[in-house]
Image 1 (cartoon, helix red, strand yellow):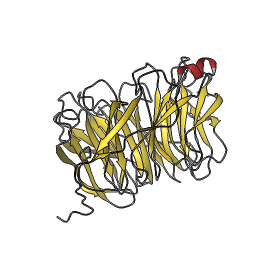
Image 2 (cartoon, one colour):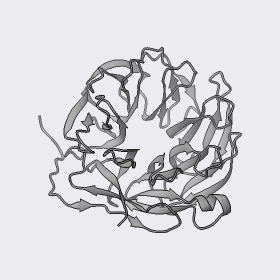
Image 3 (cartoon, one colour):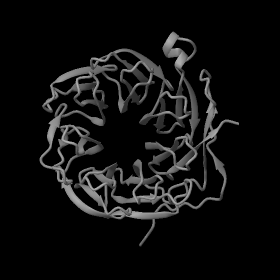
Image 4 (cartoon, one colour):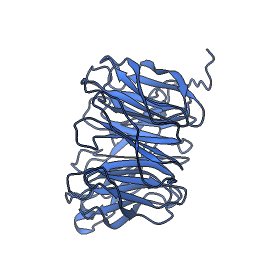
Length: 383
């Protein structure tokens, strides 16, 4: 078998953080990578990386989606000891144009399965035997320009459903029959929306899961409120009418007990939209570069100060962690965030995930890079 784009590099330290502003009282953190902290030696066209304990040994492994635009092999990387990924397995037999490998227990047997979302190729469920070995399960949906998958229990029947977003084609919800079978998908959003990402959360506190759609190509992004019967007719806009929003995440960032919304934008700053508890957003707090190129967002407490921080993956710019400043949200003192950069400016980070890979109690970062090596950045005290 011919292996393309193989890169072997000597051991060197890479991507130390740079603190560009201050304002967080917790211990400063840095995110450190090295030429050994990589997932394999192939520079694939990776679009997504997701963490989960696939082999049941108590640590976090990584599933990587490869094949933006051209078919490639998807892979699993199994964590052997404190963030060392020395076992690599193929995920599926076919090479496909994969944009998403999302993780959940889809068949209810207690282990983590993977939903694989493909661009103009069949999307499919991969079922885990409990040891990190996967077999082909059901396909879902027809051929479409899938750009992301989100896994959530939308209908309240205690199993995990699939939302598939597509660029320029209808987005769909596939309901789980309880055994990882998925029927004809119900559409949501506009028929020609360029939806790249969707987040699921109860934004108006009525007990039903609402949808947050990130639209690009000059289209308005918005929230769809759930009527309790999987009807999503009520639309609440956020951001500018022609924002290029590539990623969204939902969480209580300002600590007021109400869910907020974070939007990752292209060609403009990112924005934190403060939730009002009824599904709308009162104010926006811009952050990041004015010419930002954010393609991925994750919310996590990166310095263990009991507040959510924002991790962003950028294209042709270094990635960043934005540590939240509680004083700003309580009395407008200082800046909203302090920025910690990591990774190479030349990388194209289309996806990322956060989890404790080395067992030290702090969240580490794995990045999925298109056209360069996928990397791990360990969370360390700033020296």
